[in-house]
Every structure is written in structure tokens, then in C-alpha cells.
Image (cartoon, rainbow, N blue to C red; front, top):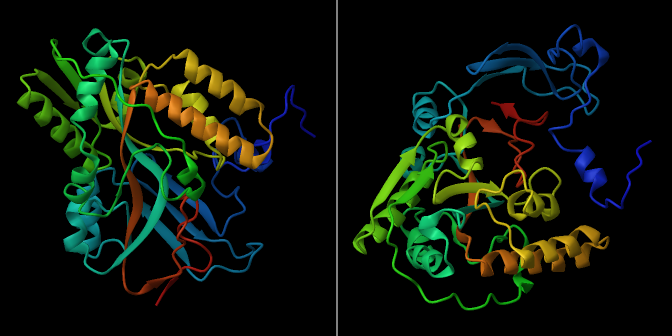
Length: 346
């Protein structure tokens, strides 16, 4: 029995998050060890740190015996390494195929629209971008249609809001006020991103090139996300190019909007703290009806975009390279389900 001090209509979704697994008591023996303690179609039998894991079919799986005998999983954070392993026949399935490798993969591809957007975060707490006009100058350097058609080769949707095609209700969004007049940038601008999603450094390059064409000095940082996150959260960059799921773990935008755009948000890469945004977030937190929450989410989106602190670029799609002998891959826009009991290797 769970009681909350205030109404929380997303509580059932929160409790079903993959980040909140309920482990058997056998998983706790001095330290947490989930091997052999799950209830899914495959039992985690071996782990090898950041290298990979082994799983075997759970014969007593409640939804029926899986069709695969087991899985060998390799963790390859570099997208090019995943594609190379797939093309070499070392793996049957590769997650998150970069746009640049689509030609190498050919027709062995599954594509799923995602509730995920590439965003450019502009840190108004930094002196280089502390006026609305300076942030407007950076926004003008982002050509959504061009980036979607060139860098993403038409495999992503140009974004003019935070919420994309995976959320059809967002089409009812109110118009965003006209941007303020752009002002020249007089200080060196620092841009940061990470290579785990191969297109992000290219987006950063395009923005940097557009700014340099205006005579702006630009410093670029590209580091693995694990080593970059602390600096991103601390607001040590003027511009951050990132990819973010806007339905996160609950399937509702409320948690995402609170964490990313509120004054006390835990993932506020833009260091945003705007009274107008705070007001819409308070309204959103108090709504209990689905339609009302969606309307409040769109009002919050409008307030965030009006602040000039976030520039949407594209809405992403999941791309999986799948060997022709593999069937039954789950096409899940939340990316929670992938290899399932129905997955089969002919």
C-alpha cells in the first residue's frame, strides 16, 4: 500500500519504470546481485562489467518458454563499432545504427519513431549568452529543415517543438511568440556534446560553423557522456547539444519537464529558471485529467521555447540493424522491449 502526500496521477507509471525493478530476496546477499533473480524471459547468468553479459532462456517464464536458448550481449558504446560488428557477422542485432552507416546495413533495418528529440540547450547563466538577443543569434544558426535532410538524411523529423510525431496530441500546441532581435556574440562560445549518438557531434559542428561564419570564436568539446555529464549538469558550457527522451520512464511528460526545465530540476542542462516556466509547471503538477495534463504540458513547452533557452532540432527514430534470420524483434517506441520471448533465430 502506497500513500502520497499529494495527488500523483502518474504513480502507476512511475512504479512500472524499468529503473524500479523488484528483486527477489535471493538478490540481496551482502550486495545486490540480480543474476538468477529476475522473472523475465531470459535469466541473467553472467556479467562482465562494461563489456557485456550472458543470459539463458527462463524455462518457467510466465508467458511461455522463450524461442531463443539465450543471449550474448556486447556493450559497444561507439556506434561505428556496433555497425562493424554487425557487418562482420559477430552480432545478429545492433542497436542505434547511425545515419552514416545506413548504407552499410542496407535493408536489414527496423525504424521506429521515438518520443526523443535532439535539442540545443543555451545556458543563459553564462555571460556569453545571458541576453535573449544573444541566444536568438544561436537559434538562427540552427536550420532544422536543412539538418533533418542532410545530417539525418531524412531519417528524422525537423523539430519546432519539444514534443514530436510520437505524440500526436502535441499538434494542438499554441504558437510560440516571435523571437527577439538577434544580437552579436562578443565572447568565445563553448559547445559540448557526446559521441554515443553519432549525429550529435555533427549537429554541433554545423552550429559552430554557422557561428564562425559570423566571426564568433567557438570552442568545441566532444567527450564520452559518462565523463561529460558532471560538467553538463554544472553548467560549464554555453551550448549543449543533446538527445533526450521526453517521456522518460513514466510515459508522461510531467517528470521530464520538471527535471529538465524547472529551477530545481535535476537535469537542467540550460540552467533554466524562468518565472513563466515555473508557473506552467505548477499548473501541470496539479492536473489530474489526461487531456488537461497534455494541455498544460504544451503551455510549458511554449514557455520554455519563449525563454530562448532551448532550440529543438529534430525528433529521432530508433534504428536497429537486424539479421535476416532474426524475427520477433519488438518495435517499442519506449525502447523498453527489444529481444522478447517471441524473438527467434531461424
